[in-house]
Length: 170
Image 1 (spheres, rainbow, N blue to C red):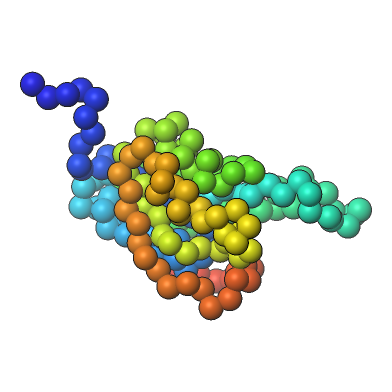
Image 2: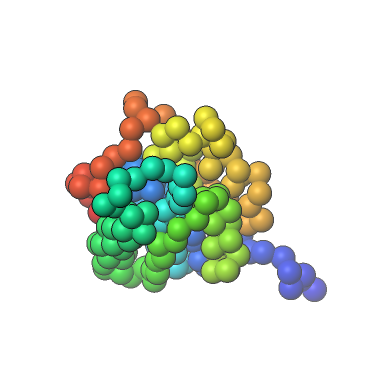
């Protein structure tokens, strides 16, 4: 008799955290291949880090910056979703704001009942890992579901890629 709480080795829903870096694009490519082979759905997640202590000019509100980031991420996800749906893959996405990016990813995995998490070792963290630790490292330590970790080259610079940068899927 099988254990009803045991998880299957074959994924049915794959969570892919996306920061729009080349590394996260590699994670999406890997997740796409897995989804095609196992007929799994993909859940794309972008977490916008909230930095309440950042000084902004009086004419720009934190809410406006976050709203612009949400709109840009949603537009990029629209393109990715169209490509994935064109390949016959069920896909959904969300853009969230949070102080703890790794925590938000782990909460989404539980909430969405994802049974596989696909991430890469390097994204658009910039100064963040030196101060708070690697997001990937936290997820590897705390994830309660199987994890597919792609080792990707460390970016040559810690500068963030501007939202206007053209990429294949976004």
